[in-house]
Structures are given as C-alpha cells and as structure tokens.
Image (cartoon, rainbow, N blue to C red; front, top):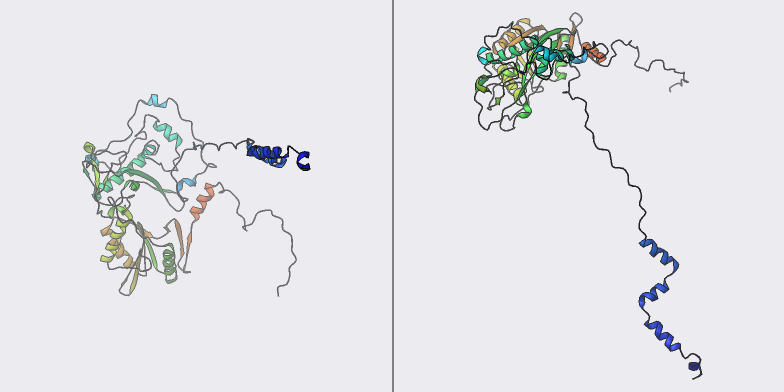
Length: 431
C-alpha cells in the first residue's frame, strides 16, 4: 500500500508511546504552573521569629498586714503629722542580756491573786531576735499593737498587760473554761489577742482593751459548731426609733454589755489552746464552758440568750426586726434595740427605763452609759425644745481627712473644681 510505505515506522512509534511508564508521561504533561505549585508544596516553611515567653510571676516583697476598717483609730495619724522614728540600736540586745523568753508565764492558780493595780515592765516578753526598745521605737503609741509580742515590747506594755489580766479575770469569774488534759485525737482551736484603744467623740483615749478571740477558721463544721447566724438591729430601724423619740420627746438611754459573747452557752465540746502570755499547769488546755469571741457560733448563742432574757421580762420581739424588743406596761411603751453588745433603751417614762436597767444588770454585767450621745460611731446631737435630733459623723470625717492628708485644706462652698473659667451661655426661654 502506498501510505504504509511512506511511514513504515509509525506503528513502532505508537507502540513505544503506549509502553512508556505512566510517571514519565505525567511529568511530561505537567505545565510550568503545576511545577511551581509542586515546588512550593515541598519548600520548607520560612522560620518566623517566635514571641518571647511571658515574664515569670514575681511575688511582692512588701510586708503584708491584716486589713483594717475605715474607722480604725490608727488612721487618725498620717505621715503628714507623725513624728520621725528613732533608729533602732544594733547592739542593744547584747547590752540588755540574753532574754529569750517569748511569753510571760502565768499560772492559773495565781490569777485570782493578781491585784487590779498590777503592772508589768515594758520589756516583758522580749524575743531573741528583737529587743523591746527596738520594737518600741518602731511602733506608734496611737496605733494598737497587732500581736502579743508587739504589745509587750511597747512603752505602754503595762497598760496592755493590765487589759489582758482583766480579760482573764473576767473569764475566771464567768467560769468560762476548765483546765483539762489534751484529749487524744482532738484538734485544738487556736486563739489570739485583739487590742483596741477606745476613744470618745473628740478622739480622746478612754480605755485600753485586750480581747481574747478564738480563731474560728480552725473549727470544723459539724464537730465544733452548727448554727452561726445572729441578727442585729438594722440601721433603718435605729434611725426610725430615734426619729420617733425626737418627735414624741421620748427618753433615749444606752447600756453596754461587758463581754457579751461570754454569756452564751455552748452545746458542743470545744478545746482551745491557752492564750499567748499565759500557760496552764502541766501543759493542760482549756475546755470552753461558754461561748467566746471569734467562735463560729458565738454570736448565735449570745442572741439566743438575749431573746430568752427579754422574753422572761415580758418583752415581745418585733416581726420586722428581730433585734428590736418592745413592751407595753401601764399604758406606756418601752423599746429596746440590740446591736451585738450595745443596747438602746427608749421610753416616755424615766422610771420604766431605770427598772429595765436594773433587770438587765441582774442578768448581765452591764455598763450604764446614761443618755445616749454616741452609738455605732455616730454622735447624737439633740435639741429637745425644738424636737430635733441630728446624727453626725464628725470624728469619722476628720479621721478620713487625716488619713489622706487633707485636714488642713480650706473648705469650698461648692463641690466644683476650683478656679475653673466659665462663660455665659444664651438663655433660651422655656415654653
């Protein structure tokens, strides 16, 4: 055939292409774009710089102190008026001798023999690390101490020690505790001293007070306590009672319960360590017979006792405020408002108030404060002829001003930014 003789090798070429490897055929069929994409797929990623690791958390080296309330008296002195502290003497400990005793040992057998005028040296309770004078130089007498060790190292240590002795004597008188051997397998509740300086409306020092409180966070729920809630008089209720007394010219008197929480009875067995500065004989511990400040159930037990005593005196508890008790007697109303250990007595007859004071004194150890002038950090200013009564917080305001160094600032007549320039605007008539 003429066509077959013109291309004799056509059949051979077709056969070779058919027998060629598949991969080679695919490589030959790839376009430049596909080759670029294939190279990009096998290209290693470009190493980008990694962000630096976050800085490690650093713990603050600032000394930590327990939080205090805004009305704490230690705020009455600021850095603007505080005297410079004297530098501590480095070798004072060697000159004073090696006094390493950290606590003042007081046997319970001698507590009843301690006179009320007993005094303790200012250097009692010195430690091996720091001497009493060194602590005293660092402490301000206007601020109460935070620990027993600090209290015994201050120049006013005798006053604080007398306050501690008075508190222990009150415990012994109330038969609050019994010294027993430590029970096996029983966890002891810890305790600490809380020191306060009671001041009057003008900031004057009235009393040094040391209160022994239990560290309630060491108690176990279901073992050491169950109920904890206790109501107090609402602030709105107290203001309403004072307004009622001002309008109707009622008598307002005040009483304070000494060591109020010590009057509550305990239903649980609680064992506590001896307080700092005192030690029991033979390493015994305290078994609490009555409630104590700081216990989880202390306020609840005290409130139960208050309700029981007012009920025996014929009072009725208010349904709207469970810390308000009232009584009608011979057509006259007698009201008692209880706020923890403060009692506000209101009546239109002074003999009724005197009788209530006498009844309360037979049940609790009370302090008669007379006509109410100061309650819940508020000063009561009364004008009986005009039937007005004013509640002021002058001391609290002065304390806040001293706290921020604004006590000497001049007052302004308007609460605006001083020396601000204002321009007149066009007054449009309101229709």
